[in-house]
Image (cartoon, rainbow, N blue to C red; front, side):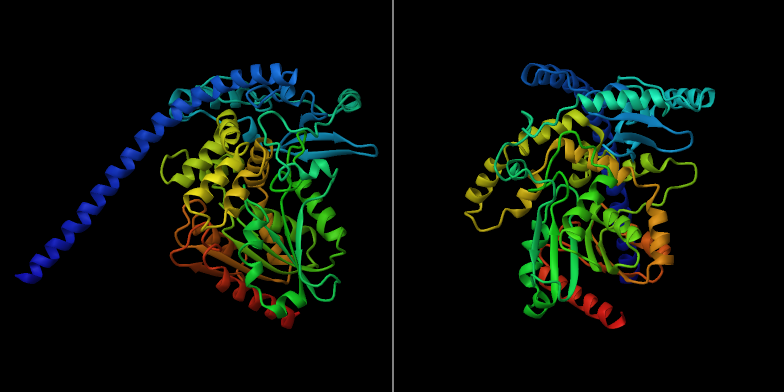
Length: 489
């Protein structure tokens, strides 16, 4: 009798949990639909508001990605082009050569929530795609897809580009909606064209080098305030440690005219670390978005990388028939109000002008938020995470998110194939079991492409606490990885 009662109670408990889960999901879906539908409209309103404010304060109309690609490129010294069957690219002309830089189509093609769930809209888009596979349809309303027209690279385009660049002016002064503090603009005052690099260890290149690459809306402090103080004296005497602020973040340059493509990010890392410090071979430690840059760097220098340590790598294999960039955008920014980290990612990824408003309120006033945090906590906690979160421009965050995370979605598989087939270095992956932004399955996906990778899923840790809060243990793990790599090498 008691056994039957226990079994019955267990079944009832399971049924209650399932029912509550279904109800919770339903509430989340309904709230998400309502809130993001409102945000679709709000973003269009902000688009008009910012155009007017920009004109009165900066004396020129500022194009945005609600506009056509051709209009958005005006005044930037770049021309958008498209090649049949290939990604959209930006033509950049220097004094010696023309360069093509890939941009993500998610900058222009971001369907509203209403459009995405509308069968009529989907059918119409398919019909138009079939009628003209080479034409991108442009519109600016909440029920259609923002898209782009295309151009052909020819002599006329080159002449236009030369004329544009000839009259193009740089903007070292912060925009009215960006922070003007000394920390955020130290690069402008010093006229630096390299990243901010925090170095530790021996001054001379007597041992191994380690490059630390932070994730999205973060900074070098993610490493220097956690790991660096916990490395042993022997490690600091044997390794040169380089922690960078990525282009557009922290104390690094934040150029207004940059599109923050993967080429621009890699060029700055090479110029600021590899070339400036004469780095020949190195270990890489990267977190989240930084993992993509780490893979791209490893592919470019296959014989120089000694070990590759990735924390929460964002790798979602693209299903057959899906467009890689769009699929990645929906995975990292699912337009859900819960969990909160996914809600924040969705705001940053889908809404250009809403996210600019958030940057205006938070980033421009980050000194106030830091002061309030210290006041409330009575200065008991460090504010480096807040500084890393706030010290960037909207232009940098917006373009980096789309051109790196979304734009490279179709390339990551190739990067991993190269790591498996051409690189002999060890590969180590760490992932928080409770990571709600980049799920643990991403690391499992990497493991399927790189079987030799050692995957370590850390219990009760999330996207941030995979490092913060366990920095001493992680420092020991890294030292062991580097030591083992040195012995095997």
